Image (cartoon, rainbow, N blue to C red):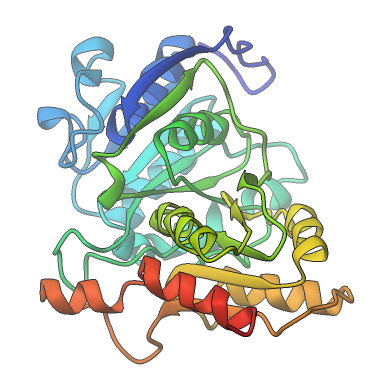
Length: 339
């Protein structure tokens, strides 16, 4: 078993394969667990039938119940157990079935995981990865549909990452598990069936956003499901002769402000698209940070987000209505351009 002093194995040469988002997460877990026996998976129903969302299919059969552990419905309790495991040489991956229940583990996430390394004077690292199943459009109602992506972005010592595609999910999850700091990894339940190219064996760079489409007229920054919709909005805008740069933010903490600033310096216009309320989120932070840094704008930044005064409804038509759409993202870009 590896210890904190031992380096993790270097990634193998990547092999390009086509996987669904669900399969990509499963592949990342399988590859990390095969490479390092200190990696363990724990959470509610993670082993039975491959987990509630089938992201853990085959892992308990391959690695055994000692490394794929079901837990009681007690998020703060088993998050504390994960902390203890990490301090004794293990690298736990904790699945929180719905992001809405991250606050039930609030003491561990806010007061323990991100602070322990600092309080120990650097004597301990805390390599805990928290897989948070996020997002709406699953028709789960208001208590099971939040992304929660910005809830913990202000905590020193904690990483926060979002995965928008199969390739991103695979590489970012491996990067999260390799990190010696606690990481909250957000995966979106509406993306599980999406298929895409995965570089199996690759690991994402820490804290780097990805420019998925280059453009010169307007910059759109998005996360999770909104990345897919931003790319579709860019296609619509292209039909009107508008050149759109699309950035997948990926890391909410740390924020890759340099990549965004370089893009906005080129386009002069910014649209942030997030499946959450704008106030207090990463979109507002990006606009604030760029403005304080003296960023010049051709037009005021625009935000496409959830309504500030409405929870996510159970009704499918209403849920569809409040989640930012391709058309709303494209409209915000046109407004920034004065069209």
